[in-house]
Image 1 (cartoon, rainbow, N blue to C red):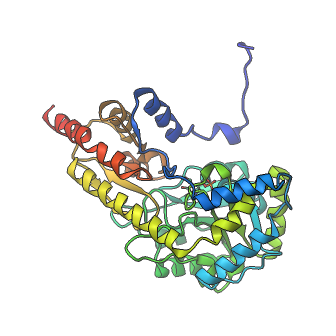
Image 2 (image 1 turned 90 degrees about the vertical axis):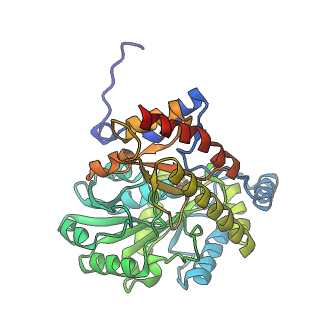
Length: 396
Ligand SMILES: Cc1ncc(COP(=O)(O)O)c(C=O)c1O
């Protein structure tokens, strides 16, 4: 077996190995605090866990309807109406998927012809470009820049051409924490609609916004909502990343295509967890208020510590990541080398900005991402070593 040589197809060779997983591996080796991965550290709510246990004990252990339990689709439809005033038909316009990750793949496989272009907003969550490649599409980029990470409208106009099929839009945004404003969204929707370009949203952090901000659902403010495909999921808000539950909302003909792809990719999302998701959606407002209060505290701690340790952190408006520049450190090298240095010297694992920038790579070389889905104690525990490390770098 050792002499066996294998050449994977180009849709795989084009894809760089995940720098998040690489840094996590080194972090484990040296016992570093893991601020690389966006995995919530708190327990899934007891009510939701009990609902999953009950579903298993009540023998809901077989395939569900391919596009998801009717009860869950109805609960989602009601949730969209209550929160965003958005009407979505539970029977024909909702597909329950194995997370946003599968949802995004299913949407792209349903929309994209080989050679079609799909615009990605960089810095970008690392799953989008591989998903475009799997669908035979070609990624194009528009770039958000610090300090505001505001949407570059002119760049979008200049990037759209006759091959452009879709734009992927993530709000609240990972990794910058930017929450797109109503004006930004209206302009983006207007430009895309004019050119007949679909918008595929990723709204997985739609309940995690700070300082009284509200999530604006793009499909709910669009004049032509049929051009917007919404994805979101339960992983982050309910601390259930391992349950693999997400959903896609799209106009009926697009949903029909998505359901076909989803059927042949996975048959269905895990049935007992779909039952538990109905319970999750019925949690009272307190649950979400507590979540936001907890993450606001973590964000504020993180901002304070990083400012104290020679970073320039950009305050996130939503989600639980922040980008920080390390210009003040006396460090000769790019962001990947810097994250490796931090893991070994400060015992803190982060992700290099270069993992999120594709076109404007220089921007990614000056920043790193901290995920603050960790307890206050753990966040506080990094301050002393990090400060020491910073002082050493300045005196060397
Ligand atoms: C923006 C964004 N989208 C999607 C995902 C993955 O979602 P899921 O667990 O639903 O596949 C993540 C996870 O980090 C994310 O940050």
